[in-house]
Length: 274
Ligand code: C2E
Ligand code: CA
Ligand code: CA
Ligand code: CA
Image 1 (cartoon, rainbow, N blue to C red):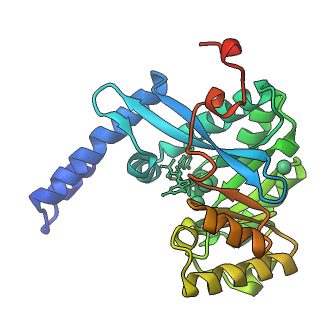
Image 2 (tube, protein in one colour; image 1 turned 180 degrees about the vertical axis):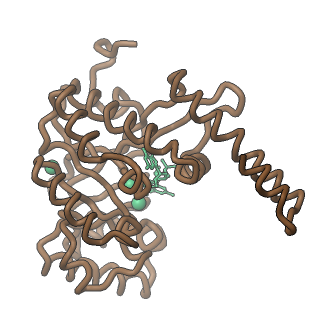
């Protein structure tokens, strides 16, 4: 085990051993959580800025642990990525999101996060095909959110994978945009449909530096014919500014926090099965 390997090393430190032991415990807990259905999805509205209508939702996973309580994805996704359990968890998220969305009265889009580790270790195209087939969800309703880290060391393979996904009819969104290595020439080559501006640039508005960045991204996206999504919109002032510069889609606490489907009108309360 990792622990034994580290015990043999000259730089063995108790704090490090503790970290490894904690990680190992969390890994086992995550695998058991999958078996025991301790995960669920919340959905956060994505609004069309012009019409004000909810046109999509992003699926965000939650872990209700009997021992730890409600655990934030910010805490368990990184561990799941490190240990590889993200592949099985990501499969579950994709299939569950499609299954639920296909049952909703509303035909809004559904955005699903796919980790770069899933692309590296799993079979994302296979998972998406299966999720679409078994749910009957129209592929046009599915949007897959990726981050730039998918391109780090397998540029050409990734391009092929993304093209295969688009050939199924789904769209691709580049999440957390502006935080990575993005350049104009780089972005122009990527097979993505949407650019999702990182919330760090949005939540802090008004701010002259971040306005310069946001406006550059919007101009660039328009030239490359990609849809812009701004996330982390918290105030009416931010909404008005983003509408003024022509951002198409917005997401953030101003329009709704992640919630259960019935809380955002996706299913009628009486219809919800348990
Ligand atoms: P993300 O994909 O960037 O998701 C957006 C996060 O920002 C969500 O946090 C959401 O609740 C939060 N958020 C949305 N609007 C606002 C706002 O106006 N203000 C503020 N302060 N926050 C806002 P959440 O649900 O805790 O998820 C955190 C991260 O965990 C996600 O960031 C994503 O990277 C990861 N994650 C969540 N679900 C999944 C999943 O199913 N698969 C994978 N691979 N990662 C996931
Ligand atoms: Ca996302
Ligand atoms: Ca779509
Ligand atoms: Ca994001």
